[in-house]
Image 1 (tube, rainbow, N blue to C red):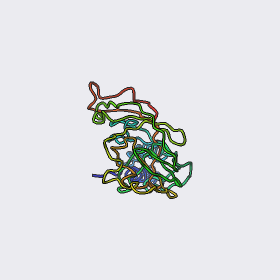
Image 2: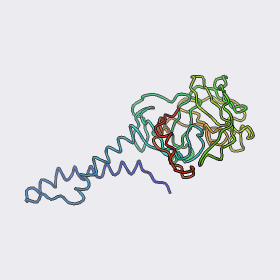
Image 3: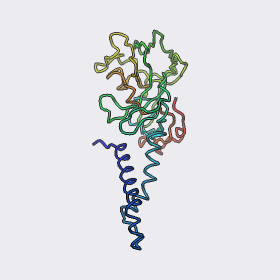
Image 4: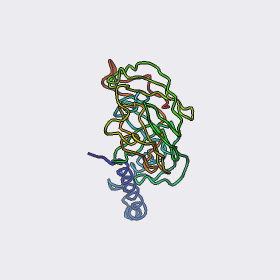
Length: 269
């Protein structure tokens, strides 16, 4: 069942604010004239909760929003159970719910880790890495991204050893990938898996040119990620923000205590 929290937050802000305002303008003066200063319970709750809900709405819509990582598609950068913080204004100020950008403050760059609304079901939030921006020509061959004809440089790190919920990725090959902007990040590759499974054919035939207002997103867990290689481009209006830090990690499958303390406070690169 889908729970539309942004819409609920906006509605609660409007309702509590309107109840408080109407009471202050019309009903409170009449109560005072009658010598009755006691507020109705609805007004009392509205006056108490409105500032709190408004602050949460402003923080969540325009500044920082928390997300939880539910899958391993961004391993080894992000692990299952990571709780992350997303900068909501990195790519512009947007109105809540309708997600319309009203102030342009920047655009995603190659290498950014971005939260966005899944194009095939905008009710679902995805997180991937930007590998191509408008105007780029992109192809993918032999586990290597080629942007504008230039291959990303991959430096082998050895065999990956996963822990907790990510233990299934043990045995994958870990690399450091460097893009044209010299941004470096770790990726996982399974050489036994084809470049393009049957469901992921967007780049299988010819290089594609990224049109204006769209971005190509790929998971760092290259052979275990449902991303733009499978379903295509992400429109600009679907962007939610740039992931920048891990504030908590909780994985019940970790040996011993379920929190990986060393990940708390880590920057996301």
